[in-house]
Length: 122
Image 1 (cartoon, rainbow, N blue to C red):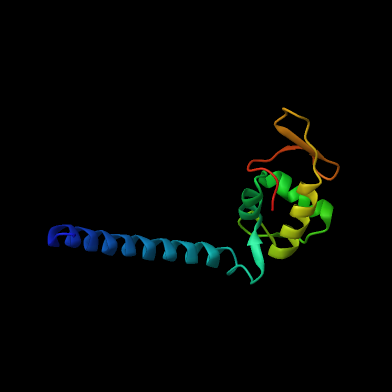
Image 2: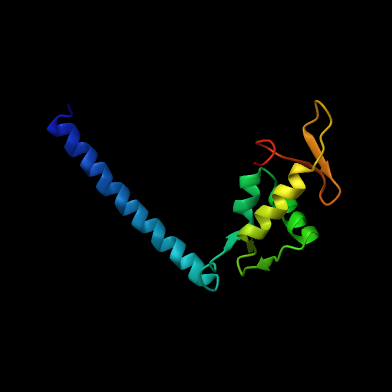
């Protein structure tokens, strides 16, 4: 069982964490307002999706451009893309990429030579 002292310590930590989360939410809102508003529904930052698939942001941009996925440049300099269209294109391209045995690099005609962490997407 947790003693009252430990319970009070945990309760205080929760209060502190709630305050930190509130501060971060304010920062995120101010950044999105400065960037021209919130990201529309169905769109996701390219950096997030590229990281999810284990490729670099630059290769994510190439994948989107070469496979016909809409790229929207934000004022902050990053890109947002339609979530489902990018995922579909990435799965298709990355599954058909080839890798020599023992090599850290993959190859696909649309992307050229690239590295992918995490293996093939499901």
